[in-house]
Image 1 (cartoon, rainbow, N blue to C red):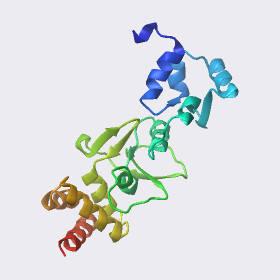
Image 2: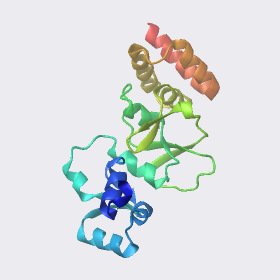
Image 3: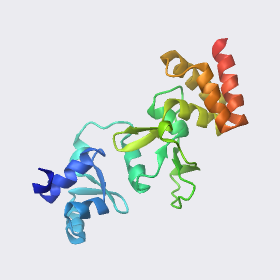
Image 4: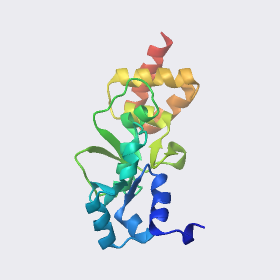
Length: 199
């Protein structure tokens, strides 16, 4: 039973679903006092990633994934951020997006800031979000259309649309419908990408 385990087992169980990452609040809930947390940080058992965010040292020896760092931003936002725009295109391996910045969509009232991320404010519908290991990401269709709406380079949108259609993930009609919901800039960029794909 999970409740019969010690603090390390409880924290490891939680962190294993977040690629080894956890917060100070998670550690406290698992049974680690702040003094014990300081001890594990000083001994190198836990790596401090950010203020109040840690990772088990053992995860450095395990194979990593390109998206490991996105878990950190999910914890930073207390689970309110969703990986989006070109960052979501990269997660879905759609097109040629290779963003230098991390794009996150957060609720309109979100107040935290960090120079390492680009924040977009919107209320996302549940059907626009997928859960990955330790973080949320917008669906492939939403990622393509929000990238188009943001005025990102048309070549990136064209390549993503072409791959999305080749995979059979979405129809031309569905893409246009979603683009219309996000406004004229998105609609125009998606129409251009569909024309380029048809040529």
